[in-house]
Length: 144
Image (cartoon, rainbow, N blue to C red; front, side, top):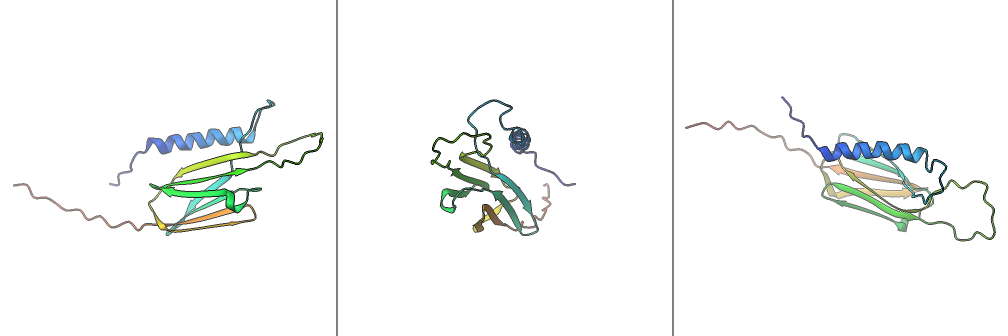
């Protein structure tokens, strides 16, 4: 019988992500509020790696910070608004700006020394090498 570790925090993160996606689809519901920029992120895995792909258009490479601590991946940065707007009358403004910070608990342990990150054309690709699970052997202890 396989036991699965219950992690209530991961369940809350999943619920938070679902609610956040709903609000991202309808950013301001007609209200004029200060909006934040949240890059869209996909996390997948294969036998050897965990792969993270983030859409971060309009952000420069040197304005992105990626950290990995205690199996938590953090991506942060800032999408700056263009400052040159000489008497423009906007008919519509949907682009979002601001600083962002996204944190993810990774599903498996990863080797922090074997992380590869590339940023091209507004797409961030992170590949994290999984740590091989050691086969746990069961030892029967004799009662005396």
